[in-house]
Amino acid sequence: MSTNRQSDAASPWRAPALLAVLVILFLLEGGVSNAMFSGSWNSALGILNMGLLSAIMALGVNITWGYGGLFNAGVVGFLALGGLAPVLISTRTIPGAWAAGGPGVLLALLVGLVTLGLAAVVARRLSGAWRFWAALAVVAIGFVIYRELFDPAVVAIEANNPAQAGNIGGLGLPVLLSWPVGGLLAAAAAWGVGKVALGLRSDYLAIATLGIGEIIVAVMRNEGWLARGVLNMTGIPRPVPYELNLQADPGFQARAAGWGMDVATASGIWVKLCYAGLFVAVLLALVLLSELALRSPWGRMMRAIRDNETAAEAMGKHVTRRHLQVFIIGAAVIGLAGAMMVTLDGLLNPGGYAPLRYTFLVWVMVIVGGSGNNWGAVLGAILIWCLWIKAEVWGPAFMKLVTTAMEPGPLKAQLLESAPHMRFVAMGLVLLLVLRFAPRGLVPER
Image 1 (cartoon, helix red, strand yellow):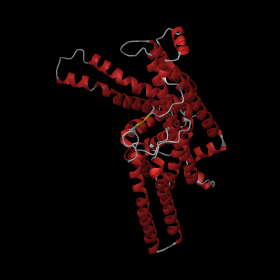
Image 2 (image 1 turned 180 degrees about the vertical axis):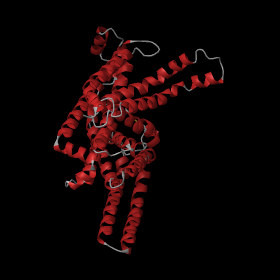
Image 3 (image 1 turned 45 degrees about the horizontal axis):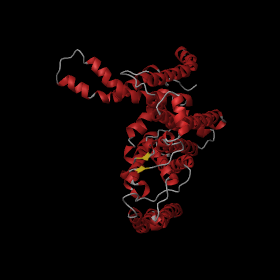
Image 4 (image 1 turned 120 degrees about the vertical axis):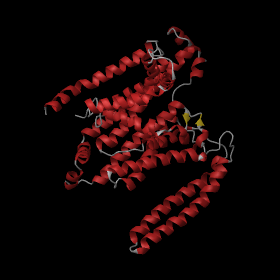
C-alpha cells in the first residue's frame, strides 16, 4: 500500500518533469551543434512534427487499450487506410480514369456487399445441414459475379495513362477534408473487423488484428488502380505553403533577412511551424475530447468493463457492443493520424508501412507513457520518437567511445558497423527499465 501511495503522490510531478525533458531535448537539437545534436531548427521541428503525429497514433491505441482493454496488433493497417484518404479526396482528377472503370468498380463493390449481406441472411434463416451449403453457394456465386465486374474495370483504369497515372485519381477537394475522411475509412474497417473478431479471446483478437493489418497493407501494395501500389503516390496537396513559393515571395525574403536567415532555411522552418500549429490544434482537440469521455459515465463504464467484464455484464452492460464502440473510436483516431502523416510527407508509400515502426513502436509509446492516461500516452509518444530518431546518431557515437581502447580487428569492425542499429537495443532497454521501475508508465493512470 505504501508503494502505491508514493507512486500516486509522485504522479502529479511526472508529467511536468517529462514535458521539461522534451523541451530541453528540443532546444538542444535546434540550438546545439555537436556530435550528439544537429544544431538545426529544421531538424528539431521535423522531429517535433512526427512526434506530434506519433502522439495522435498513441492516443488512438490508448483509447482502445487504456479504456477498453483491447489489444489491437493491427495498428499499421488502420494507419495505412487513413493514409489512403488524401489520395482519394485531394489529389487531382485523372482524365478518363473514372469513365474507364469507375462505374464497374463501384458496381463490383456493391455486389460484394450484397453478397455478404445475403449470405448472412441465409445463414440466419435456414437451419440444419442446408444452412452452411446455402450460404457457401451464395458467397461462391457472388464472388464469381464480383470478379467478372471488378477485373475488367481495374484493367481499364490501370491502362489509362499508365506512365503518369494508372489509378482512379482523386476528387480535387481541400486536403484538410481528407483528414476526417481518413478517420472514417479506418472506423469503417474497424467496424467490420470488430463484428467478426471482438467475440474472440484477447490473445486471438491480437492475432486476428495483426493478420488483418497486414492484409490491408498488402492490398494497398498490390492494387495499383487505387493509389498506384508500389509505384507510390506523389504530389499530394498540402494545407501549408510550399517552400519554393515562399522563396520566390519578396515579402517573405524580407522577413527571412530580418530573422537573420537565408531564405531556404527560413522557408523550411516556416513550413514546419505551420504544420506544427495544425498538428498541435488537432492533438489538443483530441486530448480534450478524450478527457471529457474518460470522465463521463461512458468512460467510467468502459473502465469498469476493462477491469472486470463479468461484473459489468452482471450489471446489465452489453460488453461486446461497448468493445465495438471503443475499438471503432480508437481506429478512427489512428486513421486520422495516417491521413495527417501522408499530408506531411506529400507521399503515399505502401511499402513503408512496417509493423515494427507503426505497431510495435506505437505500443512502446503507450506503455512507456502510461496506458489509460491520455497525457501520458502523448508525452510518451513524443519522448520515444525523439529517442528513436536520435538513437541512430547516438548509437555510433557511443559505440565509437566504447571501442576506443580496443585493438583493430573483426570484433571492433562488427561493433562499429552495427552501431546504427542501436536504436532497437535502445528501445528494448527503455521498455525493460520502465516495466521494471514504473510498470504503470511514466505518467500512470490515476
